[in-house]
Image 1: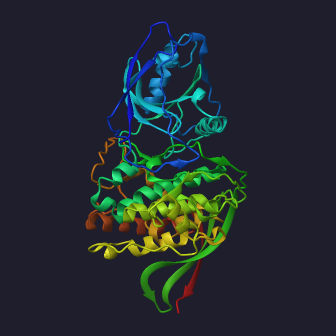
Image 2: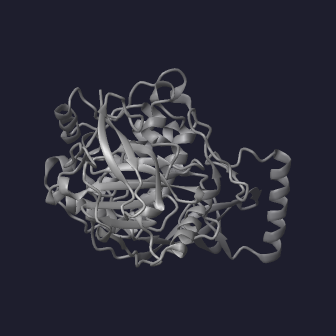
Length: 484
């Protein structure tokens, strides 16, 4: 049984630390995550705050110099709380004395995470990650520094916001977003046979794909993708966590053009079906030169090149992305053996991925064929032939499994109805039916929309169009061809 520490804490009026912990071991099993999988190059850490009260001079707030315009929103209660606290602070900075700890959320590999709020501000919840630097080796300290540095640069809806970075004596404290719905691994264990529907899988992994695309565009290789590290916000959308195993690489963003053929109408003319040639301009930013020989990650999600120890690059994230889709659909990972050693042997062997026998009508579920095809292309053991390794998420988005997703609008999609997922509906946001393609629109309403669209097309002409299933915009050269 996994042990968890019961925390008793109190606040001192004159102390800038504002928390002094006495650790008492109990036999209560943690509810944060029931997974026994842990990342390599990590070990269980017991944080015990049995120190005497720390000096007020040992506290400092590390300023975050990076401008992140998308994180700072006027209607964001978290930023409003931060602004209110810093405005009232004597030095204009946030300190630990401003925080009120509510409960222990969970114990990680490098520290502990607490649910907290700012004093006198009850409408914003935060997660405070506390790391005891004295209990870590030099290598793990480097991981903590890497995570803090990366968090300070992130500005994406599916990645955490670092609201404050506090250094207090030998503790590092990171104030981040709190996700009340827990992680995707815990949610998966609440489902029948530990599996999600294809539509639910498409919703979650599409958002993970965008988060990985953003990280790779920054030259960051994640290396620790798994359901345990995918948290679910109160609105049902995802947030990646744990960036201590990341490494950085140089990146060379570029624009690439390609031509595709699309049908423009279902009507037939004397020349047959009408088609157009589209010249699509795509943004590609993938760290193809990334290279590392560190053996880190979770054993069931390790790529073959990482297991073999010959060095690895950006392809390890796309391999893990394929394993993630597989586990969400089948309730287990594709190369899992009876032990860690047998799992690693299965990964490094020359055998291709095999799919478990589906129960009931699982094989007939809409989208399952496309999902299997995507998994097979991601779980190619040669990284040179693996989907995503050369052009990243740009190629993966074009796979038929993601057909119908309007990528620029994905934040407005309504999360799927999943057992155990409690979603807080936003009154200010129009929730579009999620990746199934607008199932909440009535046929009459759909006909009206198409009539309005055709009317607008006749007025303005069709010189350019929004290609929503690819990267933002595509430019159309109107060339009519005869179908053969």
